[in-house]
Image (cartoon, rainbow, N blue to C red; front, side, top):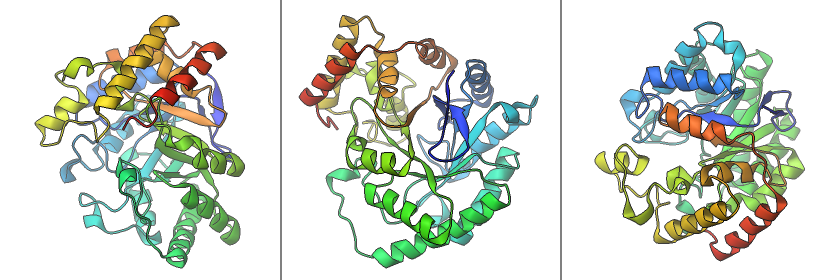
Length: 351
């Protein structure tokens, strides 16, 4: 598998990343370790996790469990040297630190906690899961209202970069990244890093898929000019693009079914809409016309984008992962790329 560097850093990773947010909830530890083995054997060396994982649902008592599962796998048979690990500090959340925002001191302690859970001496990419200013991610874009406080935000960034810089200097971290961030936020993080001599942003992990392309304009330009790599999460739109929810279906064990069973809406965080189902059906028809599996098409399309990006794939079981891996060596024709662009204009922002 091809390897690429994260932004302007010296961290080299596989061009596909394995997400792990179900490890410890929908995916039991033996199955999680089997997935990690399979991914590494397929050349996927880049693994993404977070202190708040597993999710669906997020529970106080399971905070950090996914990192622990990965840590036990890495401690086995020298697996640490086979992979690059990305993790994240949680943004303000009722489930973590009682909604308190993170500051430099919090970052220092959380880095050490993640290192202990991961049983490693270094984290290859450390990310801020979402900003303390608020974010329009997670379907909050429909009602998002930015708040004033520019100097407060810039002072906060300097404080965080001081802590991250210390961790980089000591060898605990190799690169720094953001997640669920805005174009203004990304630009300011880069400006502040240049001003204070802190580590520059190497990657930004935001949602990106055939059904969710908010990144395509302002963020894409900012990231290109600042040499930042997109880590695109939910490239299958939380499972929508597999077609498993067509016709109102709610398969047992699916993300929507589990969410509904645990008190949620079962709408995939606002993604499962009538328009999204219609768009999915249109993409499935297009895939069939061009002889593609729609899941493979959704992942391969991301690698055609005109900016640095790494899709984050995820699976609840080994069969799903095998299906994803089976299509990773296929490239996409320009005719299909252009057809996808035309279809996007017919189904813009379906959720």
